[in-house]
Amino acid sequence: MNVISKFAKARLLLALALPLASIGTIVPTLPTYSQVGARTPLTVRADVQEADARTGIVTARGNVQIDYPARNVTGTSDQAQYFSNERRLVLTGNVFVLQDGNSIRGEVVVYLIDEGRFVAEPLPNRQVESIYLVPADAEQPIPSAPKPPALNP
Image (cartoon, rainbow, N blue to C red; front, side, top):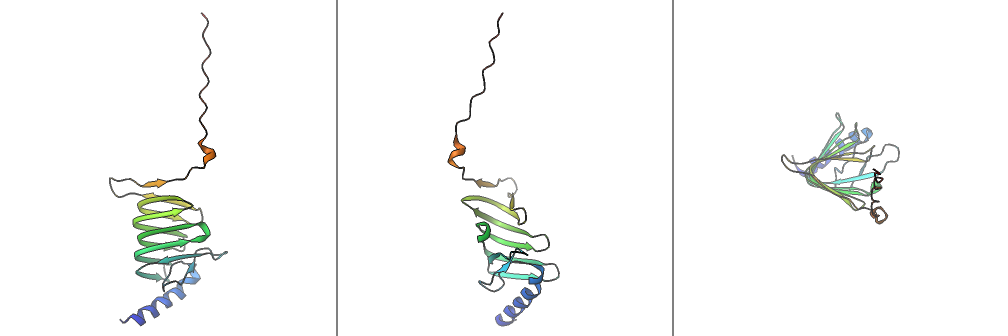
């Protein structure tokens, strides 16, 4: 199959998947949408992408880059799958996600779009890493516990 027919097939799959509110970038820099009502673009760039109109799943593989400006989220991974029916983005393989200066690293990171929540899983016998920026006003000293009353004999 030549390159032109691959792009034609990808565009057809994208056209079929868009009514399912799928996201992804089948053709470079062509964003689709993750928000049904607001239609906020989430751009996915990768070496290879495919969309399955029957299942509503968009898969991106190789050097995946995610950009979701509406929620100030960027990320990278080896693979990304968007499940349009569940509005769930699953990033796998060397995942790094950054949001508002906070970051998370893991082997698998699931982004639940409607909840705005990330769930991370590590490789076997490893850990995930999260770095959170704590506001300066939250760094107040913790008050000491009150001293127990003196006992009178």
